[in-house]
Image 1: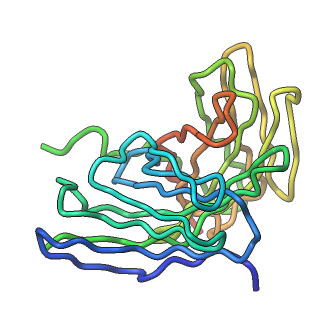
Image 2: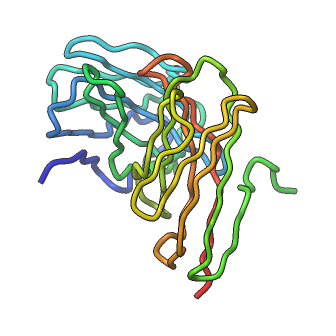
Length: 114
Length: 112
């Protein structure tokens, strides 16, 4: 059963804590992405990685960090420096070396800061 | 009061009717467009895509139309069903295949 998995589905964080959101894919995709979704707004790109051991900042990278040590995994850490972290976080992946390079999404993680 | 940004455009249709959802895109350099469906609390699901060298593409019960002259994209859903109720949003690639720009979405409600 191929696809993208995210865990946990719901996450609660106290102010001042770092939390890490998991994203795993078994689609053999080279590229992976993290987006943030807020009510009534379009998706905003946090970080993306086009290949293992390489990643770039998106439009709203401040307060977030990522790693890409394995092709299948692209965890996102929401640090205490992120001023407004409560949101729905979506991970996506795409093949990269095909045309068109369509992005497919995971089920999301809803993060709430208490 | 509430922020205007919290309110999505909405479309309410009767079951069995056809639905048309519109999207205006911003970048004339965009070469590739995607429609996604997002149900409440879930991740977006790919519906259909179209390249800029096409005007129309059909899938199962869905059709995407592209008008490059006015930078307009539409999604037509035939014989709309209650299971089609969701937020639909378009995405454009802006000429770059790794940085999609997403619309805010339209909430489709299908009444039985």
